[in-house]
Length: 405
Figure 1 (cartoon, rainbow, N blue to C red):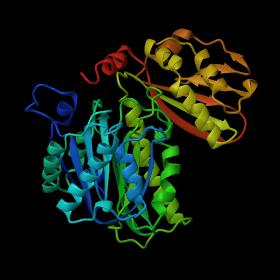
Figure 2 (cartoon, rainbow, N blue to C red):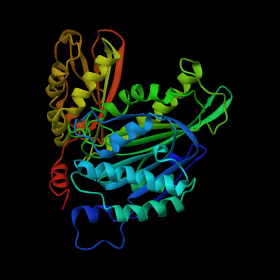
Figure 3 (cartoon, rainbow, N blue to C red):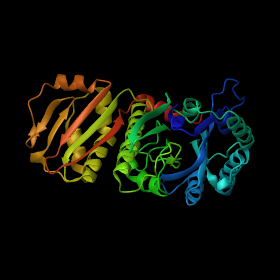
Figure 4 (cartoon, rainbow, N blue to C red):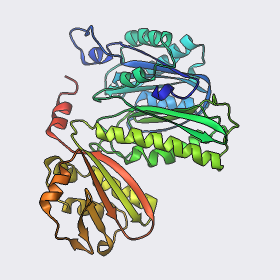
């Protein structure tokens, strides 16, 4: 059920042919997959969001930032195939219309609806098709609609990305579920593309807004595919209180337990994004420990995971661990070379300031595995973090060379 795993959430999807309209296809495919979904909560949600730091922002991002100020979210409307970015005043009108069309069908105020778009930049939304799609999606709202919604938000993704779990908090069973999409144009600058986590926990007003950024920093902001940050990046957390627990307050033990549950779902989704990078054949997990701080550890791990030279070495099975040390050195994190201990796939390749006598053929075999784990122990303090990336392949170039055609 994923994003509808938490009690009180429903989802519905529809096939609108948005990408075909956007790219000017001569005919709309009759077997068009779902490309629009609506998610509704039975109750008003405490909501928090973080968005792209790109100065070029989709109209949907700007509208959501305004609507979140009311903190009365009840629904989301999401389309794939068209980003509604760089579309001027018309783009803002269309994003507002998406919210109004959804609100009208669900008897809500427009500011209770958040909207998201993803796909080709610089093309106007086909609003006639979207109007029909929103109506169909609202008519199909169901607690079982989460998996289909995860398919509807995909663009170049090869698989839907979902996660869910239950956690006991102060005697109540809290559910957390989520979905995301992302395969390219992803970099640790709020590089989530689109991600949504829902929970039925009852919380004090404003708690989700306080938690969303630190959760993003430890999950989605540690994912890198290609060094590009999208115009549409959106990560939302919605808590609707349907579990019936006493409201969770900031700074409490219950808040810490809820945060850990939200973070675990976010980390599972983040790994799924890295594993499904455009053209990727391998997942790269970079773990940095004993750094000067958690922040330094995140910085160092991101640098390695996003290095084009590391990514190409992994793709080619080239045991060139020097590229990893190089990335750690330019990352900006504090580094003492004589304290650095580096392993690849469990094989130690560097310690005490120099490379070690390691079987390079064994390192090559480690680089050829479907998942490669790189562990850098900095020996400075107790900071730690992980980052996730993927190899850089010829297929990545092909996908993006043909994206609008």
